[in-house]
Image (cartoon, rainbow, N blue to C red):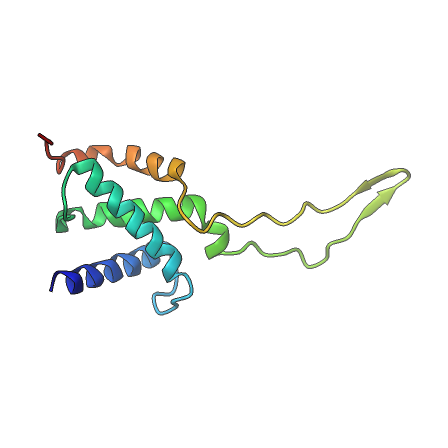
Length: 134
């Protein structure tokens, strides 16, 4: 029962992140990538708040944190930049100018720096749910 609830909650978070990022909810191409961020941010929320289950009241904060992390690190993967139609080299005398190389893709997993930055951005909202550890 608990596992089914967690799977349904995870899918709901993924779909809401897609809506916030203006991605097609029915397109499952990036579900694994977004799901990785959902899991990572969820774990960080539980560790920061010293809780074992994320309460429903934190679901919108969770979605906002995931959307922020994904858009910071993976926006080129979700929305690839449009390649120039014509890539050519301009040469005048002994000086030549070429187009810049295409942007490299982001890592397939969340980086610690981005997750920590998002966690700091949302500390005010998370502090209300933080528990003492004895």
